[in-house]
Length: 117
Image (cartoon, rainbow, N blue to C red; front, side):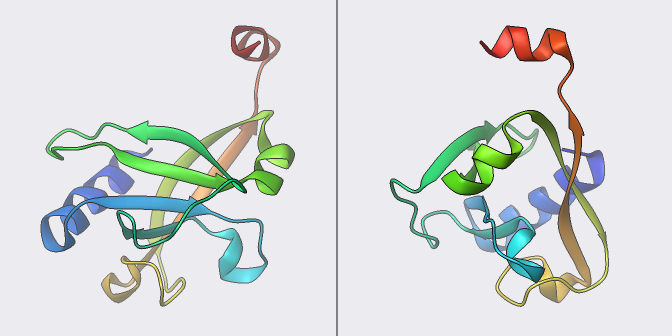
């Protein structure tokens, strides 16, 4: 995550409580990372837990989930959560703040792929 994304996550955590993210394979805003209260979005067998993000100043990790179908397409990429000005989905907690989370990605290097194996 970028420092700006971490700062927004801290702010949202202070205001709302424990958080989680879900990245679906949908179109439009459905392809953006969505920030919810922890447990508000129900995950299941069709979701993959990518990471539990430890953020300084946040007492518990923020889980980051992705739909299994999206994971199959993105499993060879390094993902970075960022935040930028603009309106995203009305369902994501950052929407009233005038910003939206987004994913920046790059292909994993050969060495990174080997380490994951």
